Image 1 (cartoon, rainbow, N blue to C red):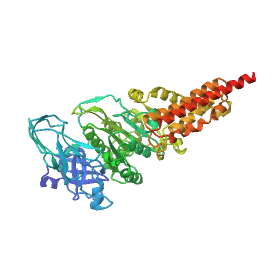
Image 2: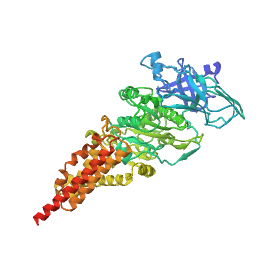
Image 3: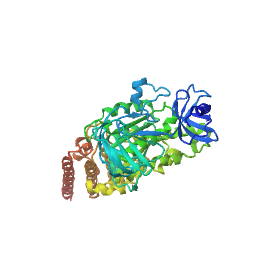
Image 4: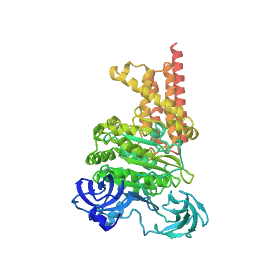
Amino acid sequence: MNSSSESAESIVVRISGPVVTAVGMRRAAMYEVVHVGELGLVGEVVRLVGDRATIQVYEDTTMLKPGAPIRCTGAPLSVWLGPGLIGNIYDGIQRPLPGIEQRSGAWIQRGEKVNPLDLDRRWPFAPTVRPGDTVAAGQVFGEVPETTLVRHRLLIPPEVAGRVKSVVAPGECSLRDPVAVIETPGGDRTISLMQRWPVRQPRPIRERWRVGLPLLTGQRVIDTFFPMGKGGAGAIPGGFGTGKTITQHQLAKWSDAEIIVFIGCGERGNEMTSVLREFPELKDPRSGRPLMERTILIANTSNMPVAAREVSIYTGITLAEYYRDQGLNVAVFADSTSRWAEALRELAARLEEMPAEEGFPATLATRLAQFYERGGAVTTLAGELASVTIVGAVSPPGGDFSEPVTQHTRRFIRCFWALDTELANARHYPAIHWLQSYSEYAENVAAWWEQRAPGWSDLRTEALTLLQREERLQQVVRLVGPDVLPDSQRLILFIAEMLKDGFLAQSAYHDKDTFCAPERQVALLRLILTLYRGGRDLVEAGVPLARVRQLPCVPKVLQAKETFGNDELSRLEELEQRVRDELAALAKRSAQEDRQDV
């Protein structure tokens, strides 16, 4: 298939942007990688009719002409898997951007070929098996210290199982050095530190599990109100300027996943630039080491070839599955799936496929499902519990959540963090609307929360109920004003505002407030609800609401989120006791005044 005679026969006959039609491709296979033109532009076969093939090219096809040669590779689009992935920055087809910059400067040249991993670097390899051992698919056969934070566990390929015939002694090895030979029924297999895997094929697992542990993010509106489970799938929809990107940045910085894969899919270059500049300077909050020591970045901005944008999320999820198979919890953040869907729409139009709603291809729902369903809490082939959590940003035009990408996404996720334009304009961050959002993982993670921070479920339910009641009261207020409401209902409005300002709003730039530990989240929520319960009892006893609002502890409660850090829970308990004391004192004074009046 790779002979020179066949290469001469396989030529380009039609070019439409990133979509190329070629003839002489009778022996080509679907999703086979081909090299197009003299520069060898990377492409993928997406349609076959007789000897004609339709190819989507992942690079700029400018100056490509009919008659250009096509060279088949005989393999699907695959990524390299091995030590050296962590801390790297790739484009949509796993070309390392730092390596390209060193070779060609700031711009990616057409036909640029740079290996995804450094083949010359030598890694300190430590085997964990011995000759004569029986090994199964996915089993760990050795380890490499990839970074200070990640010890890379080398895996037997999923299709290999047998007896260890030989293994090298501990020492330094390059990625292509043979480090072990496995005797299998089909013959001996040589194993190195690196393997390849097709991006469109999910890596195998032993079993899926029901999500039961929360993915802690340190963001109160997420962890307490709309929690995400490890191995879950969620979406952050919102219009332009509502904070999708900064919310995902916060999740990437603070979530307790062991590996972060951030996919910048079709976003503006300036946004991706801020990510590329900021992440290398960030410190991991748990270890103090650079965050890039457990992060992989995939950058495919809006000015890069549209076909590479389409495949970038498959590249990212495959890298995530590889680290999941090592027994790690991985979080994947895709920003944004709307830009990815727009790439699908453009490619479908050039392929002359029948459009569905708003011009998107009829396969949109299927493609979204194929992406989100590659997450999950699983038992790996080696028998370890691990997970891939997927969070995709959605950018509906005009913030319209009824558009196709948002609606189809909701079918395959269980956590929906709806960003609200009015909240964003009011500088309320995160602008996640507490009535439009939901999480179906709350019941799954309740047992963990109750063990770590008792009272979480009841406090969460009470706070959400108050916010729902406040929304209904606001409809009355808009018509007739707040003065006509009794104090009991005005108290609900007052406490709801305290919940919004003193709990839900959270500054990403405040040292003490940017990350909130689970125990502190519950303590802050209990503090506000203690004020509500005491104020409710006083109002029912006839005490004017104005006197409750004038208590000296009220501003202290509002400022508590920025006053007390995660290691100052005892001071929060002291403030809660102060709230009780002031409420009791007010009740006593009111009772004395009532007796004097009598």
